[in-house]
Amino acid sequence: AQTVTQSQPEMSVQEAETVTLSCTYDTSESDYYLFWYKQPPSRQMILVIRQEAYKQQNATENRFSVNFQKAAKSFSLKISDSQLGDAAMYFCAYRDGGQGGSEKLVFGKGTKLTVNP
Amino acid sequence: ETGVTQTPRHLVMGMTNKKSLKCEQHLGHNAMYWYKQSAKKPLELMFVYNFKEQTENNSVPSRFSPECPNSSHLFLHLHTLQPEDSALYLCASSQDGGFDYGYTFGSGTRLTVV
Image 1 (cartoon, rainbow over the protein chains, first blue to last red):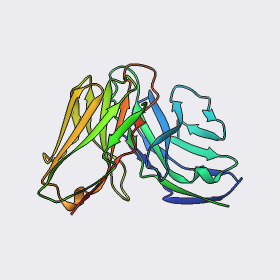
Image 2: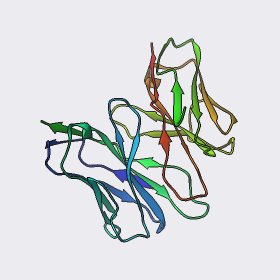
Image 3: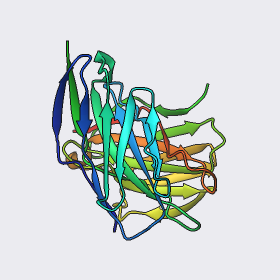
Image 4: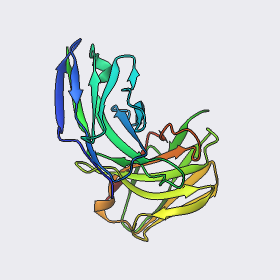
């Protein structure tokens, strides 16, 4: 079964600085998707960024970028120019891809990010 | 109204009560999910519905009973719950079979069992 591990229960960053959140996963599949979700105090999980495993290029969304290392099964999230509104729980998630793949999203335990003014 | 809407936002119930959680999506998605989110634990998938048919039951106790009358609505009926069932219950939807954008989540129902 696929598993997702986030080894940092909590992280903190100064406003305007850069922070990297770690995620590793375990799978025997070659076709899959990886996601980072943000959960602010409002509780709604919001998709931050996604990566298809077959793409070598790292995904980027404005201040958010990933470092996808397929061989190492690593998928870290980098937040540049951190803002107070970035404070939230961040969840890494995995989903099988391809025809007949499971619809399930498998989540890590999350990393609580604090942004200090 | 757009997105995924969950009601109620908060629920306190006794162990002998019967209550229902409601989830509604206006995105035209064909799959809906219930997740349980407890402190210090990963999100736990409970049920998956695809085109109104239940495709997965992740060994959930029978005191949780899902219902999906159509592709836009999903319910979670609760009865004789235990205190350890207190958690945030999240509903999500997705469009399967197409380009994968992951799930769209609701804001959850915070359930407290007393």
